[in-house]
Image (cartoon, rainbow, N blue to C red):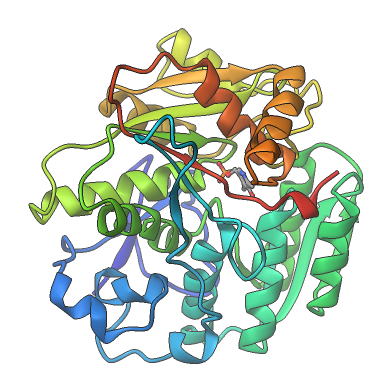
Length: 367
Ligand SMILES: *Cc1c(COP(=O)(O)O)cnc(C)c1O
Ligand SMILES: [Zn+2]
């Protein structure tokens, strides 16, 4: 049976509705046998992330997802500019709630439903909250979302529209997470955290599976925005499983992007540290990656290093110009997503290098 294990002390834990971290404070990971990937089974499933259902940590006969899915996944992979045929964008803003968070939220809420929970709590800088609220509504599960008073009004309106209760907290992103975690403990609720809950990564790993299917090979590099690292760690996990199944031979290089004004991981990477020390967020237009103390920093740094990857940080003025340049090519992304393109523009790529840039949040959602 699948279990959780603590990334810090190694202790094993059963998967229950209330567990979300180890007593020692460490984050949890799923421990399970290497999933066997049976490519010929994919066509037995709807055209969505659920093509890869058999590689996810669910019982073989589980059908819960069928009533919860909104068709998330299988987002387009498009050549950005015909002059550069090796540079692709993966248009993850074409998701039910307009960001990549639906990959994780659909899987996480499916698990919550299977565990029989009646209420979930989550904290978010915006998009994770909208995704969890939408899928909680699909599941008929009550939902409280903790967010900042400064979150984009459109994201707040979307959370509200799905019937979730909004808890607006004054303070830093870390204060908001702490308020949610306190409520989780007090109410013995399920913490539907995209950061802490390992099932979220069972969802974001489909990003790698889709790229493998769409490109029919492994890209040389992946540009990935990083706040808490949920897309980065999911993509890494997905490519790792593809390698373990001998479907591919190499891991793409991860080029991780942060905003200069809130870049704890860039700093730790440069100083060759194992974990990131918290920084103070100096304020950035990229609200979705403004995470001063990422809980999984050790895993993120490890993943980037193992792929021979690197970090790039982006200045505020580069964010606005990158968004304008993308819009001029037809793609209107939210400011947080514009950092990805800004990172690509700064990256010194090799000739013919195959690169994928995620467009993972819709422009219509942010300032
Ligand atoms: C959540 C989010 C990110 C950052 O993801 P992390 O999991 O925090 O690393 C980047 N872009 C968009 C559009 C997001 O919604
Ligand atoms: Zn522990």
